[in-house]
Image (cartoon, rainbow, N blue to C red):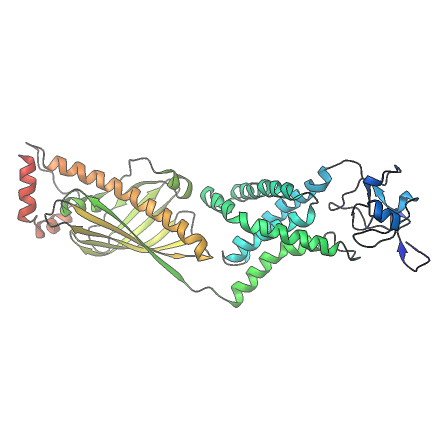
Length: 418
């Protein structure tokens, strides 16, 4: 750098300019071609138009230069990938790293699901120099790329990854705006660490804030109860028996369950008496439930004693119940399946609609299998010349005998059978 007659600093040697980095919109070295349209400032990389050339001063940072000395400015060669590709790689790499560290050091809350995408967008806005529509395109590439890496590292499942992709959209766009403004502010300064240090600070902010918030402001326990109703076209006794002895889910699960939860396969054990343990087997894991209350043909209560379904970081299942409500003629029964769990994800307004939809879909899938079994059992019981079957569980013989079918139900069944 040299001093002009006015006491101002001037760029007269390329060796004194900031080191080239992934943020420089430059080529490897200055080019001696005299083309006013392609001249750029050595400090802030702003284009030097005709007015700035006549004043010999950069319009962005005020750095003076000599139009007749090609070492005081640079002429860019068309290498457009330098404007966006390094920033894109930084946003993806630091975004995944920030997500992984944030997930490890604290709760799964706003710093993870809002702070991380804001940081990703801020890195894109700060580390790239392209037009608005190009930044939007880079965001559309970055979000799926980050999600795919997170899923491949088993930090989230497929359904959670899809949900993250949708949740990340708005925060990433907001982060891009912040990064662009930060770049415009810092490029007018002579701070020699403005190239990399802001990017590292942006990437470190979500895990740091998550650690501090988790320690200083512990999140209260959030208990959620979800109920789903389905009508069985059978008497309550038939519906009750199918709930007790239900063993296998035969129908194909809906696409939401395929993406979000392991597929239920079968059940093992009994659930007729208080203290019985029933094990629900899924394609990838299992769930064990202990019976805590039995009111024959009316209500069956249970608590979850073991949960190994690969979403323990998201929710912890607590307990639930089946409640049966027959109609006045005992020809149909409304079955209510209730599940209570502890939510670990926040903010609540983001995850609650997703959780409710998934749980309702699971309830309907399981109860639909029970309903089909109950209809088959009803048709078998009312078929002519059938051979009576013994109870599936010996311990239920006494219970079923203690609660005989009401006369109106028997008349209904006899009428259908005849």
